[in-house]
Length: 227
Image (cartoon, rainbow, N blue to C red; front, side):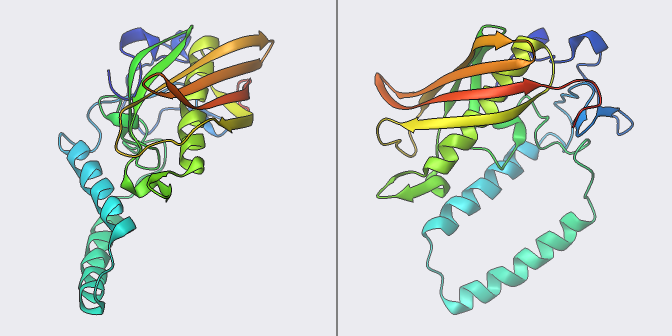
């Protein structure tokens, strides 16, 4: 498993019977799919390489100080690349970004890359690595990027527990120590308490035995058709 739990664990709407689909006509409830259309095919066999190259560009841009000449050259080249992507745009329901469960973070480039090592109703464990792009200052990760990772994996824990889609109501991050870059870290999230549709989620981020951050969060399970 990489971006989501393996097998039947990652079926938040398992009763729908549609854990694998690549069809644009797949319905969705409110702002979400009625079922999670996971895939390992959208974007082709080299989509993961493409995501990695874009991540590498972001890493280098975070530290690079290009000459005016190089900046002008890169602007022209990036315009060409963007024009090519303009011919390939799809809606969010059929984009490989966020649904490629064979890739880190399900292929979602907006998330810090993580790989799920365990997941189910009892919670989620993942290895996450904040890259140079995620720099906050003085060589450590930005707290906002830490929160984004917690939000995604906290939502995954809530969804696996309730077998449905959840929205974040609040997420409070306590930063206990500095979060290093380019270091495999362990993030765990789990539902600590459930009250009807309210899923009270806890989570921790560790660098070895050292606690970097933890969360107290509330996710709300959506009713059918709710956005």
